[in-house]
Figure 1 (cartoon, rainbow, N blue to C red):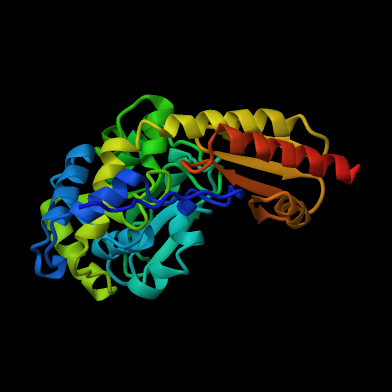
Figure 2 (cartoon, rainbow, N blue to C red):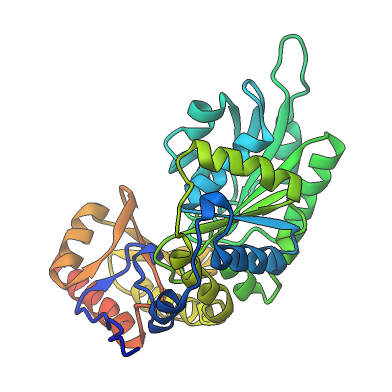
Length: 352
């Protein structure tokens, strides 16, 4: 079969998110060749293959393919908690900040928040936030950890800190969920396998459609009993897909071919941070430049700077009034990274 594989070219430098990545040629080929079934009926072999691969990679007995990271996280939380239970999460964690209040709406869960240092919660503060169930108080049953931490700038939660959360959970008969949407960024940045963190959590979600370049999808991993119950929540949330092997085929490529290349994104992030940080009107907190994100502090309102950058065909997002987030990914090569730096330089000159 001769099939023309789409090639995506654009003169836009899109640094809004690593979710904007387009599928690779290998992914299109994998979709064409995918063996398909009906995943709701449990007989899509390509979905089975992806789930087995993800489970093995993270050292878990079982896994479940989901359409999104939000669904994976919320299915996990719903499986772990009952209405009226409490969870602990970092104050700006994705499960709280970008999932539209789902823990409360879907699960009736109460949330205790801990303000992290660059996204990392102090274990002592986590311990102090645990509330024992009583006639008067909700019981804290779950610790949610995000690694890498999005709003902190792609920062890594150290394995040693994750181990401290695990000890707190064990001491208080609690569970741990790891929102590992960008867990492989943490693994590549530190040289530690993703399983190092996953082994310390009862459940872990990973996103395939960010730096790993798949068009759609995440995977939730855990025990066989946990995943069996989580499948009920996936169905309840509308996540049962039919010939989902078309998407799962891309996920297999993500896990087998796209992890090591994340190092290129990290390198380009450091390169951009170094150059932009030296320009007037901009500054960088270097301690946050750990993976594929750069948080640029701006003297001018960030929305104005973003609008000016767009005139130079560079797209970015302002997560705060005086902060711009840049996210490196597979569709931003060295040439585009250099163009982004030049655009910042032009904007800086125009502001003088």
